[in-house]
Image (cartoon, rainbow, N blue to C red; front, side, top):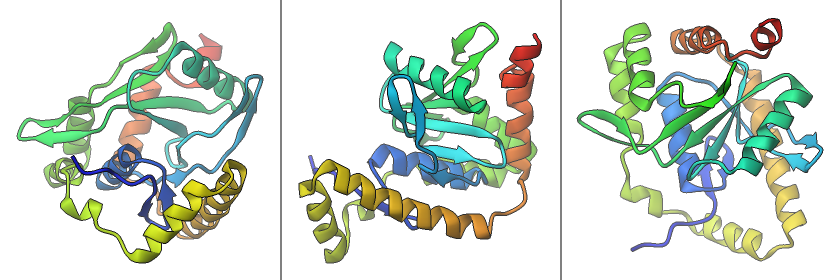
Length: 217
């Protein structure tokens, strides 16, 4: 089995895992605009750095290889309480076959706690019905494994060696600076909300998922 690298260059970012890369591709194929690690949130347990922020939807996305622990859920609750912004967990490494997306899940907080209120197939159907069948097909194609994922320029190899060997605080500083620059460039050309983003926002609102709705309940 080939060893996967620690840093994945994508859209000007240095993503921290192959799983994050696949979720980023899936978001793009769905027509969802994102920023990567834009906010370091102070919570009682320390700091929390959500992986993605969807400005046109108004939600943080946190990628996990498996179901989040009670401590991770507690931190997500703290972020929502501190910022008023919702957090959704993206779980697993998304894959696809003829039946659509699989091997992944979404965990959201509703009025009665955390639930898997939407499945990967639900999301793909949402895109198919509100955007186009072609967009839904692009979602499936976006998460198919590519041997080119293992090919990289010598410069990226050298950079990864530096980051892996650097002090953790130095590595985090380099990554934060990189992501801040990339986020600023993307924000400068941020598109209008897409059909899929509007549909996703509407779906989340119907789940009584928004902070304002929970407060009014």
